Length: 403
Image (cartoon, rainbow, N blue to C red; front, side, top):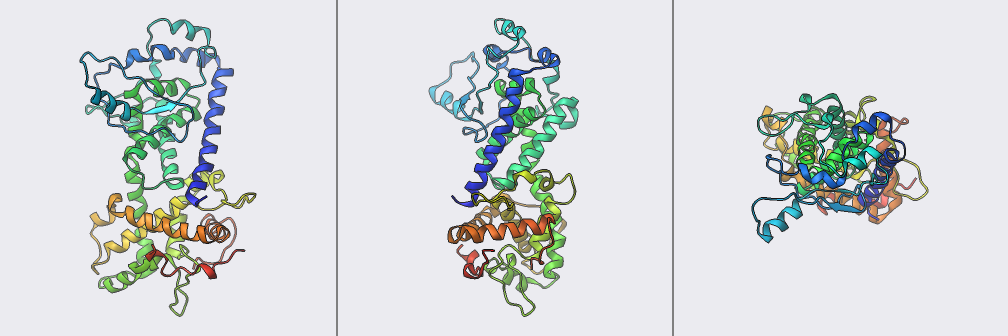
């Protein structure tokens, strides 16, 4: 199994267990407070579908986070639509897991409401801006908590699973993030409304999705000074930058004699310092908050590794910074703050190919490399300084250690 697949399988198992436990709690032991909040039922969810707000174009594949997925049924329309339009809408409709809150599991009050019209609990309502979007700070406290957790969850998904998702994947990841966040906060009414109210789900998912681009841009700004200092970038450095970019030399450390250490890919100190400051700087950082998500690709091995997406994202950001300096002149403030993910996705895929090359050559060597990186950036224990096939030009797989 390639490293990315192994990582995704682990993340899927962990997330599925968490959501399953939360929903089981709702069906077996709902508190008195929750009984008053869960005033809704699946059968009447379609009654709120005729919203006047325009539906966002969400092309969502079946969610990797949930099982036994069922598409939301489209609301009734006054105008007859063509079969092509109906097929298009069905493709774009988000999908969620079949809830474990069946009619049998719902409190008696919910069963009674399932036969009558109802309104969602008022605390699930959103405050919309003039352009029909929502602002996190304008929402009530309970919605804000769910959205803040969803933002965190989407950032985490991007560094553990896929840092350069396409538009369809991004929509699905955002929908999963808000649904999971509602479950983590035991906000079962919000989760239920996300599942049954299309406009509502799209509006909520737009908050974490809209912050994903700025997340990468902020990482690049943080890395800029690290890269400038590490490689001594200054006016007239165009030739040096070209040499670093060629064959992706910048991911390898260099010894005192100027020799590229091909047995230590992704171990240059610019990589290690950027990963540490981006994801492991303080108790509230993503890396520290997600320690249980760092796992090993080897069966029966508990040594944590850095995920492929995290390593490749930082390597790609360093490449982007070097490209900003390729003219030999310092980049403008706008260049430092900008990052075009579409332009750099090829570099990201190249770094993934390098790690896949290592993994296919020796899973043990891949494991040793990623464990070494994890120890270096998380300060678990003292470590030596981390000192395409174009990306494999400097790679010396035979010299890489297995212990």
